[in-house]
Length: 456
Image (cartoon, one colour):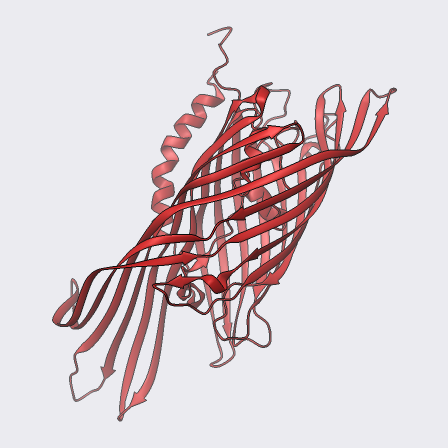
């Protein structure tokens, strides 16, 4: 029978080009992506999304019924890797924008790659683990048309933008009994292409159209870290059933340093006409190339706490339930793009989430081994387009579905993780509000690699 490790390797190679293609083609067409480096994706594992966004104090991998996922938001969790793991996440995103003045509504649907990552235990006995991967962080994608009257003519203006920020990362984690520490580093890179087109609409007089475009490429190394501390607060041993119930409290903290990306920019102002093959330049008003600058991305931090119950029986150790909360904040007032601020404000989020598994100890019934999850998030968004701020809240649901019962393959812990998120940004004080729905699907393929075969 083909080993899971072979399947993982082949699947990884097959999906990498698809991942890059989807990252470059993901479109959103939202005016909110105009600001900063665009609309930031939910930069979390699918499990965390179903838990309201909990990442700082969340960890798995130590219990049979939750499998093993890569919590790249807190690299301290890499220290709990006990199998090689391949993680892939995809998201279907549906958004509806509503404007009060003028009254209008616009809906867009998108298919977005979330992440691709691999986790590897380095020295399990000493608590060393590492992970690496690729994920898109943000997208710039909009096309907005306005019309106005100037000198008895109609002026059409089209604002367009594309691009976004991506990240390739590698991290390492180390555990000392209940304390874990980890770091991520790598490279953030991206592009922001902004274009403004103006054209007079006149039946008798022909005017040239004007085009102003700015194309900026940026990139730079980053560093972030995390820590977790877990200890038992109560323990109960039942001799009759040969089980031990352990209640554990886990604290988590993550933080990312302020980052300065090196950037180069090309600026173009020209008159043009539209041909069958695209834009045809008539005259260049101004052309500037290779303008050096920097893009400052602010620091961020998160702190959380989780209480969970783990039960050990004849079949192994299983997580019965967990509940947690977290606070996250980012200093977006420090964002600068070529020394210019944008319509951003300091953001914060408060999150709560819970997970439970009905009866993993018995091993009877598929749905008794499923992990059910729920979460809630509220806070202030980083976008501030109208100066009134944007309130942001969301509810989430999800499940961790074991692909095979653990008895089928002693060395296989493969899970299909799902997350449903319903959220809204903005309130009655904002002219434009946004409602969204996201369905996220992730697969965590784990296997004990490099174990010699007993039979061919």
